[in-house]
Image 1 (cartoon, helix red, strand yellow):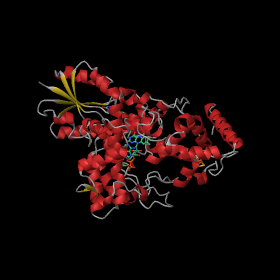
Image 2 (tube, rainbow, N blue to C red; image 1 turned 30 degrees about the vertical axis):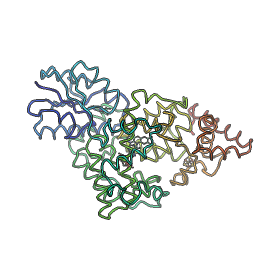
Image 3 (spheres, helix red, strand yellow; image 1 turned 120 degrees about the vertical axis):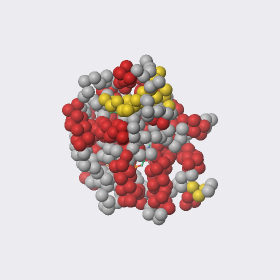
Image 4 (cartoon, rainbow, N blue to C red; image 1 turned 90 degrees about the vertical axis):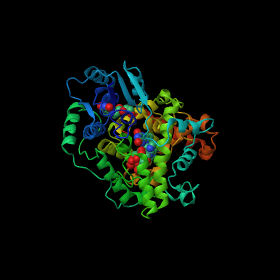
Length: 508
Ligand code: FAD
Ligand code: DLZ
Ligand code: SF4
């Protein structure tokens, strides 16, 4: 009997489990641009355009390979508006009763498929280096689930950067050589850009018409939208940026949006690149003497370690993970996250590039927008929705552990052993933002004092009961306690005043 084979927008890979289990001489592939997926959050227009263009091209690839593909465009009058609706429509059209699907990356859609009145076979997504069973085996019985130990297991299991039973270069981790402050200049061109072809241009017009008021600039659009282009983008990164990736992994520059980052997460997450081939390309660059071990190990750790680990946590913790809020934060997300004016240069620049590119690199996400939201006590679910909307690489399986867990500490410390909070000093050390800011990073109180300096102590003070026993935070509490009482009172009063002004909608 004929079956339907569902291929979602972030499953654009010929080796996909559902395609692998299907018979191309008989089964029918279903792909659909649908309202439900495009509007469950108000995605950045570049994210929607990237996925629709990549979906259309992947449908052509499948047709060329002999598949019968039923593709629905967003503006097709018969469009049922949801994934399940489209499956039902295609079932009626073809007489198929059963669906082969690959597990989606969000509980929301998994639930929708489970409730769809067709027999849906959900197959495990094999585009990852650790299966659910691998992760659960590692996690079982452990008191704490630290990424570093998981990562070592993954190195052993895959043989990546291994020399027999030992880590290549004699160490698992070279971070002490990484994370230098920002360089004065970046000597590379940055990610490879692609001119819109006919398919992309058509999609850009559609997205412009259909989502006119979503936050974010649609043009210029330059992302890769098929596998061949994504491979070229990867090659460019390995050739140009990888050798210095480690050195400047945590740096930020006012006039450089990408530094030495790869800008490939959107391609990996949509299926255009595979994690193993990306790690192998980096490892080969080290073996050929093109890139040093600190860069290559640091890069591979992000993919083989962090990326696989956060996915494991998302599926292990379950659907309620995104609503956790152990710190009881309740503030509304400030308007400047949506582009309203702010005098804080670091935030203005991180939001501006997010609006323009649907991209910010890791340290901007963690130590600027994430750090500020945590210090200010913004409700984590609002922070989560913001990240899910504005980044082209965002799907819950990877976004939620990074936001709810790593950045907002809302899961109570499953992912992070202490909250990622810092005063302005960290941002000043790692970037050049402070040089052109209206606030002064060296001022701790009074007119023009950097808000991060005030909010940092406010955060520690209001969460004292939870964090003062944490050995990694003891030093911060000692510093706070050594300040004289008047000074502490001034810091807290100025922090409260700043927060009141945000709540009142004033420009800060
Ligand atoms: P590079 O810095 O060049 O790193 C290489 C690759 O490593 C990335 O492409 C990515 O696949 C992987 N990687 C690195 N760090 C992580 C991480 N913490 N978790 C998972 N993979 C990682 N990444 C997403 O893919 N989607 C998200 O929605 C997302 N949300 C984030 C939210 C917050 C608050 C934080 C702190 C991080 C988030 N990340 C997310 C992780 C990371 O910031 C991005 O993967 C990275 O910035 C993508 O840019 P790049 O390809 O240039 O990465
Ligand atoms: C993100 C997204 C968007 C914007 N649109 C579609 C779509 O129209 N059709 C589709 O199949 N997938 C889309 N996606 C990706 C899905 O939302 C994604 O598969 C789930 O969030 C699970 O990761
Ligand atoms: Fe950001 Fe403070 Fe530096 Fe301004 S002074 S850029 S607000 S850290």
